Structures are given as structure tokens and as C-alpha cells.
Image (cartoon, rainbow, N blue to C red):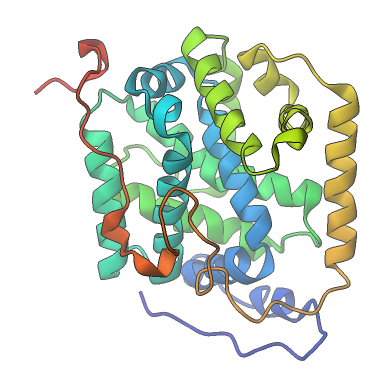
Length: 304
């Protein structure tokens, strides 16, 4: 997969990249489009939306139950977030067929190989990583996505899913979106394990702000969840916090429109990874990933 580069946009022309992306072929140029969209146009939004996508999977009892059984979010929630986002970033930056991309995929596949995970759950998780950022940006982005950005995200993750040996990935954007909607309607359900993992995940986010602000952060995080997700976690809707969070995100989008185009990609200048000392530049892709399970109930382990 050849890596293509985009010349810096005219200074101050906030929409130059969108016009460029709209001229490309979403299937053929999907990796280039996704790298530009997630790394230069909407890096902050993609990070928040992928965090929400990960949280969303815990509303499925079989997924939330497994993650709860591993204890990963209870004992190392920040690291679990970091591992997921860093590995996904490696795929976007280098490409899924690059040496770094293959290492990232190997880490992901190895972590999944220890557990009895249903293919339908893997396919749903893949779909969440496609559609949650699209829906987030539709609500809170500084501009709408062009059609090529949406379809390119689908093709990018479809290729990733094929290399993860996920079966039955639809060949069309609309079919995967339908699967995502129908799966959530049928499979989202309250479960003790999913609620525990959700609590741990929200606690991780709350620790990103000073102590006195953490109750407000928790209320706002829950407030950004839609009704099916809150219902699955048995969270009441914090109406005031929900309104404040959505208002703040829309205000951020309006302010972002006034900024000059971003010239440094998130992937080339990532923020510090919280659960690791130093900076992300001090680590290679193969430093990330979870260790083999030690005390997980047999029902969650893959039969060998």
C-alpha cells in the first residue's frame, strides 16, 4: 500500500483538504484519506470517538463480561485504553501491510487468541470503530465529513478486519452500518460485568482532570451516551451535564472552524501515552499490548 502525501494547504484555507479528499477514490485511496481525516482534520474527535466506541462494546454482555473477567479495566484501565488507541494509530500511520502495521495486527490477534470470542462480537467491534467516529463528527465536528471520508473509513477497517480473520465482513458501507444498528438493537442489555467495566472506563476518563472536577467529568461522560447505551449500563441521564457537554462540544466545533489548518499530523506528533513513562516516541509498536491471561474462568478461555 503506497503512502501518499498531501501538500500543505493554502495558509488559512480551512476547507482545502476537504476539497482534495472529495476528488479521491474512497476504495482505492482509503488509507490516504483515513490518515488525513483522522490525523490532520479531526484528530481530537477521532480519539474521543474511538474511546466511546470501545466503551460501547461493553454494553454487549458477552464482550463486557469477558473484559470484566480479565480484570484489565479494573487493574489497568488506562493501559488498556492506551494499548488500543496506540495500536490503531500504528495501523493508520504506517498502513496495515507495513512492518509496523503487521506487528500491531499480530499483537491484536495474539491478545484475542487467548479467549473464546464470538465472530459476531468481533465484527460488531470492528463496525463500532467505523461508525462511532462518523456519528461523533456528524454531531460535533467542525465540518461535515465528505462522502469519501466515511466510505474510506469503512474500507480501511474492512481491510484491517480481514487481516484479523474476522469472517463475514460486508462488502458495502451500507450493509456494515445496518449490521451495526441491528446488532446493538438485539444485543445491548444490562449485565453486571458490563456495568463494572463501564464504571472502570468512566473512572479512567475522570482521572484525566483534576480531582475536584472529576464528579463533573463523570456526569458529562455519562451525559454524552445515547439512551440505548445508558440503559444497557443502567445509568440515569444527568440532564444538566448532558446539555452542558453537548453545548461545549458544539462551541468547540465553532471555534475550531476559525483556526488555521493543522500542519502536523497527530500520528507524527502524538501526545504522551499516560500509562507509559516518557513519550510515545520512546516505544516501538511491539512494546504495547496485554499479557497472557493467568486467572480467567474456563468459560472465557479459548478451547485448545
